[in-house]
Image 1 (cartoon, rainbow, N blue to C red):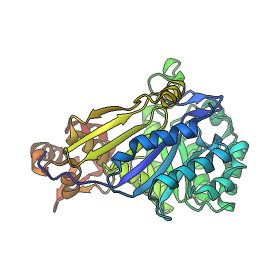
Image 2: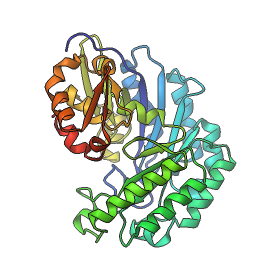
Image 3: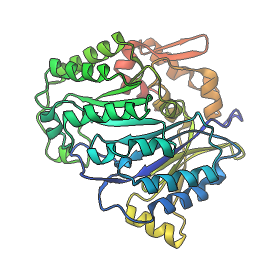
Image 4: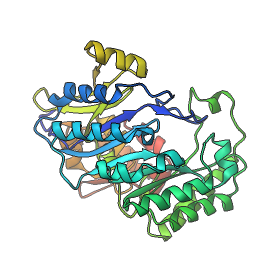
Length: 377
């Protein structure tokens, strides 16, 4: 470190680990019900233990992920937001996102979630085609997805993300583009369009489905991206297209700070006084998490980030517009010239542009992002 380390914006991530059914592709920390009592109280106690990390900052954004947070009862949502407002400085216009599924049970609560303080929904549609939803293990139909988006807009959610997957079993390019067009026609502010990957420790990894050939999947990604861009959804990150980018996502990719509360939640904190950046992790098991919270045990694993430059690049190179060298220096405490050889190598390979202290992936670098990121490892 060279004492350039400055306090970045601070976000809050809240993990809600339960879902109705574990999807075969999902590697997130999610658990089929029943939902344990006392989880909201445990979250707020967890937050109390993390208030020291705020360091006189306002909360920049809040994201409630899972699992399926839209399974939360209305009573729990109000208890959570009452507790957050008591403890945090939350400005009225900050982005507060809830991940939601298009199931009827959740949709009926959208209006109340809005009243509780949530102003952005991220709806896990994945596909509008029933056969694909069945393949993905989803419990909603294409019709449920259309109704969910319609209901969300009706109750005032004008800031809305739709999650879409491509590269699915038996999917043709036309089927993929029909899904993309259907999402566009629903007029969300944001579309996450990403390839199905077979992650370790998932049912799909154990029993791999037959997916389209790589060339066809590549074409789906390229043509889907082109269709989104033509319709005003600008790609700002690898799988994110928007008319209104997510503040919370951008904070991640710009190596901002975030407090993580809940079972399995990660956090990333900058400590200017010690000139250190560290990550935190909570126990993954909801049962263990709740048990330790109730007995008052210290549940947070804290680990200093070893390779700060690489972690910054791992995140910020995902941004299509790139970043300034001054952002790198203020967020890592390192001088940009410490990466001169790596930056030069990436430029020589045609993967990176470095002009007027602005660094960004080329279109080739964006397409071969893993290779670009590995240069900084």
